[in-house]
Image 1: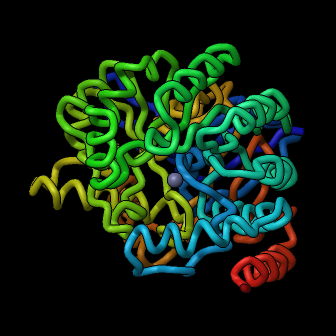
Image 2 (image 1 turned 180 degrees about the horizontal axis):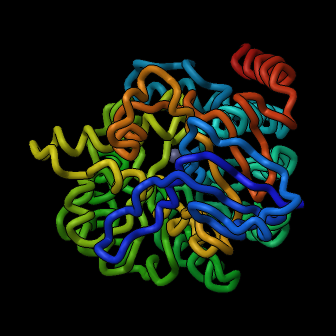
Length: 431
Ligand SMILES: [Zn+2]
């Protein structure tokens, strides 16, 4: 069965020869099964015969947003321990509660996040956490796309588990699920263990997803223990011999930025989590100057506290303008590129998603242009970053399947998800 999106402004996120984004145009998108077959102002009648029509009137249709860093199940801890010092939050609030979580809790916490992501325009996300099978089941059932890894600290057993997880889930759910390996961080995983993970990643042909240089104290402690800063040490031990996606990278020196650039490390920039935890602002413009790939992540809703990628894009742009005193840095089109094209590249899915191009997967969102804060619509690209929010997303497709229509999730019992997640949350915080 073919589907035809009609009457919509289409933002493909493809680039023109001069590198600027192709401007939105009024047009049509033809979808066959899970793929985009054609995009254009007027498709030929022959091509669109017998297609199911999806009316995109008063909407802008663009590629689904790609959230490159998070921990979906932590929605169960939203608002549990806010405004506390980082170590109090982590060691007295987060870790004790996580110890009580079961696979069922991870499943319901993940379901809340998946529903929230779908409704706010995220069609693909990256996730590192424990009980990763429970998350993978939730992804399989809901129809969203995800790159999942079992996040580990220094443990041979867990490394084996995470490799087994990779083998079990890579390419599952009609290709919607991909996997990778994720050591939690350089401070929880010593250099020789990280080297072992590099070998496993090479063996499996995958990439590594890791938190790096999130806090100042973490860098200071690391320097004292290993005599080098985190990125320098990672470079020295061969960690970047495989592709790496690094989350945060807030406290990195000029030398470290050069190392990241040299090895083509992709960055998951999580500005709201970094701000809320008092960790600072990542030097994104300096990374861009060196040609580093920047993508956007929300981190978990325990440190953010929502998964709205529109808000994340806006904060990312505003912070760098404020930090540099230069309003021309991170223009709207570039930030949209971070959240779509670059997100796809960071997760090694650029052949499949990131732009609305013939041959790619039909992952797309319909942004409602009829809301007050989107008026009068002089510059739709600018409005997406500086005015829109997640609740502008009206309809969405992943892998050619409509998962939300007119603001309603079609295949998920949202009331049940909320009820079960509340039950899980109550249980894990009770003494
Ligand atoms: Zn994280």
